[in-house]
Length: 326
Ligand SMILES: NC(=O)c1ccc[n+]([C@@H]2O[C@H](COP(=O)([O-])OP(=O)(O)OC[C@H]3O[C@@H](n4cnc5c(N)ncnc54)[C@H](O)[C@@H]3O)[C@@H](O)[C@H]2O)c1
Image 1 (cartoon, helix red, strand yellow):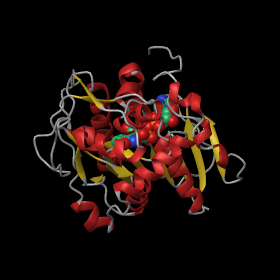
Image 2 (cartoon, rainbow, N blue to C red):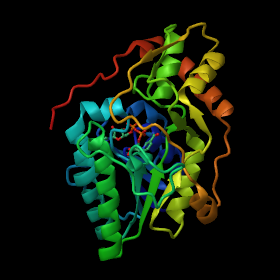
Image 3 (cartoon, protein in one colour):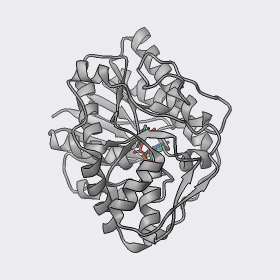
Image 4 (cartoon, rainbow, N blue to C red):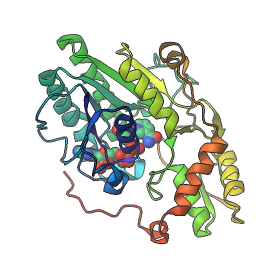
């Protein structure tokens, strides 16, 4: 039985990865300090004999007894509301955390796949973004803590590949959505649906002409699975190229939820990217992958999930855990 360590395993994407690798017959070790994740995301896996949960901060030394074939490094605050609140932890998990994972991989002779992000492209001047584009990132702006942590993570991963011959994979994930996202994580999709469910107006930051591309989680997980098993060490974009303006997206959510609320406008936050659309030519050729789930279908499933949550989830403060600042 292949053994895989998934850091950030109790988070949105990490928990879907745990499900997938359990389904593929792996022994799955999920590691998470629950800083933004939720044990309920993996509760259904806890009784399984081929599933382990380690409550641990991956920015500290990682010890895993026994063999490991693969390590997926997904631990990191991922939404602006999280990483702006916990900037130092974000930088640490993107630097010390990946360093620990790479060291562990060398000892175990395991293959590492890291979760990078379209945020490495910053506010892009090239559209859509191919992997060869180096980005337009402000290192000292508020988003720098996330964007630069992810850029460093790619650099150190590539260095371990080049200098130590470690097997590595880099996925650049574009906006992904689906069940187990948090309603209050500040990302646009749960924010709109949460507002609709609470009977509030939908807030658009800026004039709504900025674009985003939303990938349904099952499509993303399939792309990651294929990339892990491929022999390609350079970054690969995985996302859905279906681009939409935030204004159009708000209209779609209003239609989906049947809310009679309207849209209100607030000033755009600093360094908010104006455009986001993956160029997925590489994933198509290398992995024979492209997204299959339409936005209409993905949104319907996600809306059903949010509707099924206990009502108090709708009113939870955006950030509800206590942490030290370092
Ligand atoms: N969701 C997206 O659209 C998206 C887009 C691009 C990249 N990503 C990347 O994918 C990964 C997962 O994102 P997500 O959306 O599932 O976010 P998430 O917040 O739901 O999951 C992140 C998980 O990492 C855990 N974590 C954070 N710091 C940790 C630490 N030091 N030690 C152990 N665990 C820690 C959190 O508790 C959480 O469970 C992140 O690396 C993120 O940067 C996500």
